[in-house]
Image (tube, rainbow, N blue to C red):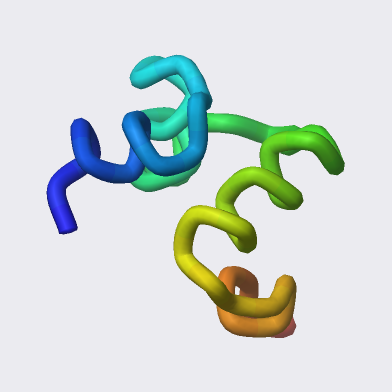
Amino acid sequence: MKLSELQRLSGLNINTIRAVYYNESNTISYKTIERLCYALDCSVGDLFEYIPN
């Protein structure tokens, strides 16, 4: 899926999507997570993975 398609489905700003996609953000809001999960039809666990140091 292209980032522009995700923007259309989620209603998020393209800069927000890019920051998440390229791991350039230290924080992410609950609303952003909610919109991504809705647009991608997935759960939070599908978006994130915990990798210990």
